[in-house]
Every structure is written in structure tokens, then in C-alpha cells.
Image (tube, rainbow, N blue to C red; front, top):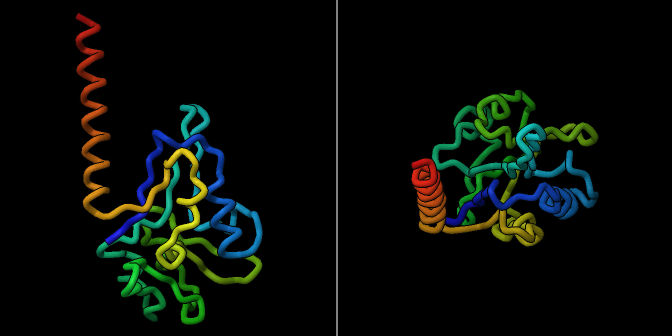
Length: 161
């Protein structure tokens, strides 16, 4: 199964992913209508891309009383059908990533659907802070990040001696 992988170490905060997402899904360049977000931590000087993790045991899907959230058989994406949704907001509350949005103009909820298996945000992320990888790749990426942090910590410890 492929997943979106977010790497804040590579994010520059350009927000191209948000613009690409809103344009492909809504036909407008509006970060408020994007299914992906770049969270800025100005004090720390970091930008963190975030979005739906398409969880294996998706809390949003579990709490939906009308089953308007389901898993796509082809892409394994967790999909929200706005035509079935009753607007109870349980999914928004249950999502640990804040990945479900509300379109004020259309009065409907929305979330990432992986662009039907070809995520537009990935195509426009020039630094590769957002990628689309298999579970094996995701595990490898996590291990590399942990190894790099450990190597940096060891190097700092050596420098302090």
C-alpha cells in the first residue's frame, strides 16, 4: 500500500503542495480549500507538511454514523463521500491529524483522496518533503531519519569531549 509521507526536514514552506491540491480539487488556488496543510512554527523557523495518513484503523471511518467514510479498494485511500455525510463532525473530532476540512462556500466536509492514486501535492513538492511511497519505503525513511538524528547526537557528544 502506498501512503503520503511528510518530511518536515525538507519543507521550505513554499506551500506549492497546498496550491496544487486546491487547484486540482476545487479549481482555485486557495490554501483553505487544500486537503494538505503546511503548518508554520515561526518561533522555531520550521514548516511541517501534514495531511491525512489514511490510517489502517482510521478513527474517522470508525466514528462515522452513516458510513460516509470508506476505504477505496484500488488506492486504499480513506475517502469521504460528501453526498452521504450528515455533517455531525465526529470525523473531524476523531482525526488525530486534523485532516478533515469544511468548505464554507459549499457547506461540505472534505479530505484527501490521494487524487485517485496520483497525488498532485507530490508532483509540486520540489524539495520532496511530500512523497508517495510504499509501506516498506515509509519504514525505511523513518529508520533513516532516526539514524541521522542518532548520528548527529553522537557527533555532538564527541564534540563536547
